[in-house]
Structure formats: C-alpha cells, structure tokens
Length: 72
Image (cartoon, rainbow, N blue to C red; front, side, top):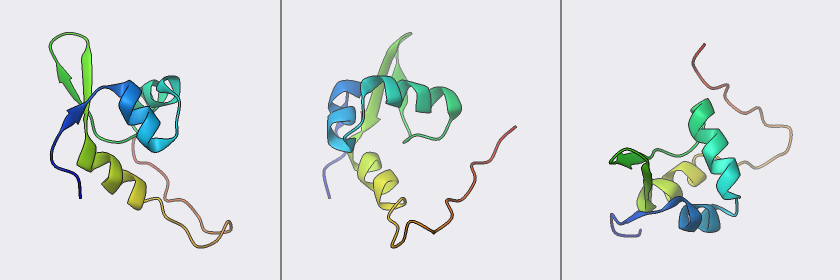
C-alpha cells in the first residue's frame, strides 16, 4: 500500500486511468475518491485513498449492480 502522499488531480487521474475532467465531475457529483482542498483552489488526493476507492469498485460480472450513491 502506498504511503500517505498527497498528489494533484493530474497524477490521480493517471493512476485511475481517468481524465482530469472526469475527476472534477466526480467531485461535483460526490461519487469520486475522497479529496482535500489546500487553500482556496488546490485539490489534493491521498494516494492510498485512490487505491481504496478503486478496490471498492471491483466486480466479477457486468450484471452486478452498482450501489447507488447517497444524496439528493
């Protein structure tokens, strides 16, 4: 497991094989990996959280239901 290192969205997107734009949209919807804000605009992801978030999405079949996200 990686150390608790905080990284910027471009590196997080690379690790998750997503675009930076997709990560930004996930932050707005609240269905992406946990993140922190440092200062007014700087978004950071803890590298270990990315792997935990990704591991929670492991499926064995395409017919498995994804748990709906909570919220309005």
